[in-house]
Length: 534
Ligand code: NAD
Image (cartoon, rainbow, N blue to C red; front, side, top):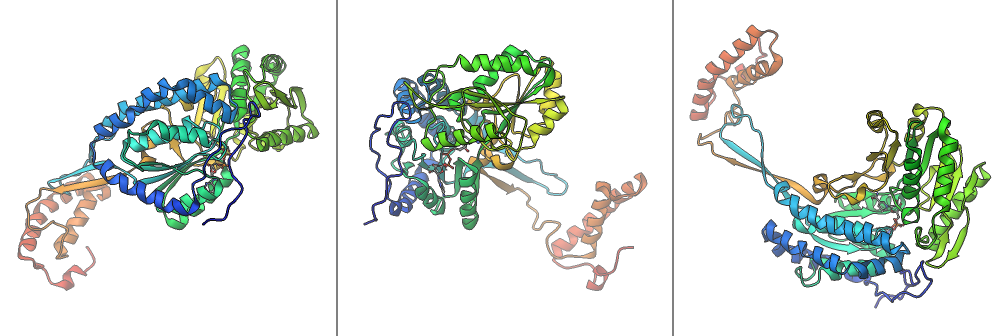
């Protein structure tokens, strides 16, 4: 029997403070068996046609939509996010994910014929296939506990993988709901649930999985990468962000202010792609900040902006705002914890003007409803400061000149850049979501996500009826001369005439080489092969 340990699971709602239902932890000692059963279930699943798998998994879309209110309620109780945010960002976004992959996978998984040079490699047909990776560990955070797991689980199952899914210990009930939605659709054990905290996640990385898909903090991401390196299995890491918005003097300030307030405060700022830094051109800074303050002060805590999901997260926000205060920042709205109906662990939506980019509020991921704003002399300063971050997830540029906006966007060090918007493209299933630096290297969304969820298999069928290939044994002087002639034809010849000469050489050497191959003997003595070319 395993020693009893303190429950890792969140037990009260950050929205109401009321007790949440109890959750059973998966015994650590059973995780290897869970993985083994998933692997066994996969064999029959992978043997089904793609169409059957798409249809089977696709049936979950109707279940998601039919149970929309129940899903939003569970997500709201566990995370505290407003019910409407759960409906838009979790329920509808997930249904879109199912539709998208059902539609694009048949074409995306079609084998592609490789372009093979018929002169060098005669009568060969090569095709590139995408095969499922195998059995995946999917380890997820709590901030979008329904949508984030599904954006991987849905395509991963459709392409033929088995999944062992570990939701965050903060949102285990939403995790269970996801697996329940697939009940009776999938073979037993194919989509397995592991409930627990870091210990369960670590055990899963050490188990017999073929890939770990991880979303979470850089600190844990490093541990996952180490564990996967030990086993030499790949991992996809989607980690934190500290996303910048650059507001140019010609921006529509009303749209920029309200878009940035939404991008910074949505999900109480607990969004890897939230606006966490704003750089605004000096000439419009005053007018812009006034608008941001007005929009922020209009937000209703508990209705528009939910609570922080955990007390630990609220402490980080408090610490960062205090650091900004003592580092010369001006808190112009909010700046304090609160306890409002619907937001037991609330923090007032906050606007801070601060110039010190090294301050923790500007340098580190805050993950809270705080928008720090700094003035810039010009766009070059904005680009430089925006790019000076160890993270690189999303960024935005706000300007009426969209051509210029696009040119600036291309200079920003971020995986997703939006002009005149921020932070919503994670909900578009055809858009790749990825980052750089300490944001990791995972890609979800778009067919590019298939590079994670599948591996290539190159399949070559040789229709060449000749007894031997030109490059097979024996190695002879003729073969050597042929190789040099090919090098000349492919660009090594010093002149056009030399190239024509090389073509004639190939034509005359080839029959000789064929005779050598037929006889299986070199037409020339070994010493000749070793002579340097003239
Ligand atoms: P976290 O790293 O604390 O936990 C993430 C998951 O890892 C949880 O399920 C946790 O139980 C598990 N875990 C903990 N220790 C582990 C270990 N040693 N081995 C394996 N798994 C382990 O992150 P969090 O607090 O849940 O999530 C917030 C973070 O996630 C933020 O940094 C945020 O930016 C990031 N995030 C990134 C994206 C993205 O797409 N880039 C999306 C959402 C959240």
